[in-house]
Each structure stands twice: as C-alpha cells, then as structure tokens.
Image (cartoon, rainbow, N blue to C red; front, side, top):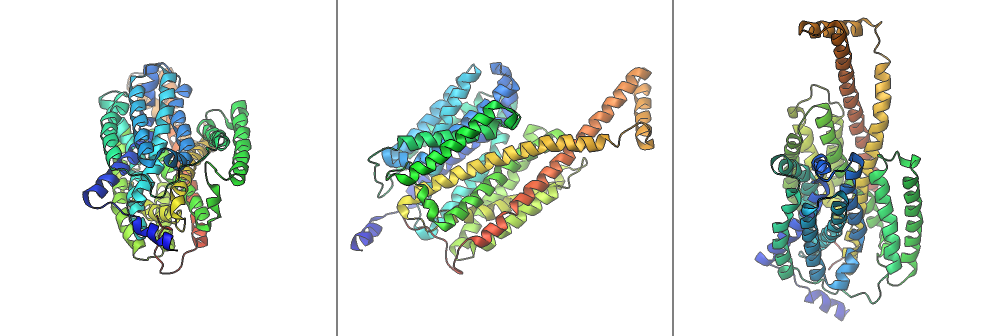
Length: 526
C-alpha cells in the first residue's frame, strides 16, 4: 500500500506554458493525421491525370493509407513502451513528414501508394499516442476536459480535410496537399522531442509478440481492404474480396486465441473484461460510422444532386465543426461536475437523429440556408456524443492500461468509419437501381403529363434553331437527366434516413452503461 501511495505522489503533471505547448503539439499532430485521411479525396481526379492512373487504381491512394493506419493504431501502446513514448512519438512525426515529402515528389501511381502506406504508419502512431499524452497531462478527475480537447481534433480533422484539399488543388496543385505537412512536421518534431515525456511507470516489453502482430496485420488489414474495395469490386462476386474476407476471419480467430493464451500480448484484449469498455467500443463504432459516414455522403449529395462545387461544400461544413469545437469544453465541464454522461449522450444522439431526418427530406430546391440548422445540430450533437464516449471507453481502466485501451478505442472508431462508408456505398448502389426502376415505370408516352413535358421541351429546342429530330433527341436526354437527378436525390434522402435509424441503436446501448448517479467520470488513474 505504501509503495502505491508513493507512486501516486511521484506523479507530476505539466503546468503553465509547458502543459499547453505539449497539448497543442499533440492535438496538432492528431489533427494532421486525421486531416490526411480525407484531404486527398477531392483531388483524386487531378492526381490520376498526373500519374496516369485509372479511376479504380487511384483509389489505392486512399486505401493504402487507411490500411496501414488501422494496423498500427492498436500497436501504438506496445511500441511506445518499447522505444519510449517521446522517441516513438517523435519518430512517428518524422516518418509522417518524410513520407509526405516523398508523396509530393511521386511521379508514378505505385510510388505514391507506397509512400501513402508509410505515411499511414507514421500517422497511426500519432493518433492514439497524442490522446494518451493529452489524457496524462491532466489529473484523473480532469479526464473529461482532456478528452474534450482531443475530441475537437477528431471532428476538425476529417471535416477540414476536403476543404483544404479542394482549395489547394483548385489554386495550386495536388502536390501541395503533401508539401504543407512538411513545415508543420518539422516544428512538431522539435516540440515533441523537447516537451513529450516518457510514460510514468512504463515497462519495456521483454518479448515481442511477433505472431500476434502478424495475425493483427492479417485481420484488420484484410478487413480494411474488403471495406475499402468491396463496392468497386462488386463484393463477393470478386475472388479477391472473398479471399481477403476468409483471411481476415481466420487471422482474427488466430489473433484472439494468441492474445488470450500468452503472457506478453501485443494487444491486451483482456481489457474487454471491463464492461464499460465493451459498451464504449460499441458507441465508438457507431460514432465512427456517423462521423465518417456523413462526411462521405453529404459532399456527394450536394455536388452530384445540387451542383455544389468541392470548395463550396467544404466551406459549408466548417461552421458545424466549429460548433462542435465550441461545445466540447462545455460538455467536458458538465462531465467534470457530475452530470450523468448517459443523459448527455442521449441528448447528442437525439440532435444527430434530428439532423439526419432533416436531411432525409431534401429536395431539388434545397439551398444552403436549408442546411444551416441541421449542421449546427450535427456539430453540437457530435460534441455531446464524443466527449462522454471517449471518457467512458477508458473509465475504470488501470492507469498502465490506459494507452492500450485508447489504441483499441481508436481502432474500433476507424473501423466504424470504414463500415459506415462501405454500407452507405452499398446502399446507394442498390437504391439507385431500385428507385430508377420505380420512376421509369411511370414515364411513358401514353401519360399526358409526360407527353406534354416532352412536347414543351421539343418546342423549346426547335425555337432555338434545332431540327425536329435533334429537338426530340435533346428532349429525351433532358428528361433522362431530370430523372437521374430526382433518382439521386431520393437515394441520398433514403441514405440519410437509414443512417439516422442506425444511430438510434446507440440509445439502448447507453442504458446498458454502468454509471453511479452523481459520480464524476474519471479514469482509473495514471
């Protein structure tokens, strides 16, 4: 008992300028990592033209980063203890920055894909380590504030990515998407080496669980590939998708068995004996689905159906993200003062559900003004969901296991985002066909409404000097374009509705969370 008391007394927390330099460094690196998950999405067309890649091939620029990211995130705790947190975090910044430089200088597709994979390894090392650095900069009773600060990065990174990517691509070239990381990375390297400290009480692993690492790579790497490429490969009609699904399942079973039967696991999945961590993981999965799913579907909806530009879309999403950033500290104070996190999460789920239902009734006449209120609700709702979920996911975990729990939580959230995008893609593909079939059944020359519209279009084109045959062809094409636009809007509306219904799954999970009334949400200590 005395040794435990002495250990607790020996723990010191950074103060003043040192504390905030450390926090700003960590959150900046986390935002940089998350920003790069989405920053290239709006530039893929320009990149494919520059490196001579097809639409299918260029998707690997995104896929390679996502695969390496999700592989390294759960291993960050082990590597942090193995090399020392300062060395590992600084090394990850260096790897990320150097890989960014090489991405910018790449002149062929597969060179770019290779360096994006390396960039993902460095970036994955930043995310969970940054969260553990921020959490351990505060005493246990202030963990809600720490997670609120980290939560701001989780929302701002993916939201600002498309905006910055679109602006840079429109005004400079796609190479600058990667070049801008370099000065930030250099400053972050200097600051992290000077201000990040090794984790108190960290024990260097005596043995490395190589088989566990190999099984983890096979499981989550294959799963991420299936989720990223499934839609374009027509899912299980593809032998590759089928093969990697089998590999993922087999490696997952082997990984779980391995980690539960050895004394030096690469990833301590025994932490899932903690009930609230299981509930937190389910919530984290849904949070990832919601965060990345809406960032994915809304730009497609407004650009394809409503004709918005990429820059216009990105700029529109910023106010909602700022609402989240504003609400995060408020939620942190509420949690710290003993407000029941269940009530806060349910409030967040309700606001998010309303946001999605409002989008589900969009029409061809919808304008920016129709989306302001929904996105304010989304921003505040995400803040109300994220802070308590991040806190509850590590609540009650012993201090030495917090970094491992953080790594697992971040991996689950990233996989949730991948599942969300894959499910939305699959739904939209099927929905487009069904909706179009239903609409086409009502369009024929024997219906007065259709006949009158075609005749009006033909007369309009003839009045502009086109021949009868040309006017008829153009009228039919115009009608087809109108049909396609309506079909896409209906499909996207249904997509928003489905995501909204999925979010409601969180409510019964929230009621299953164990929390003593009036208790403050804290971790198990540092």
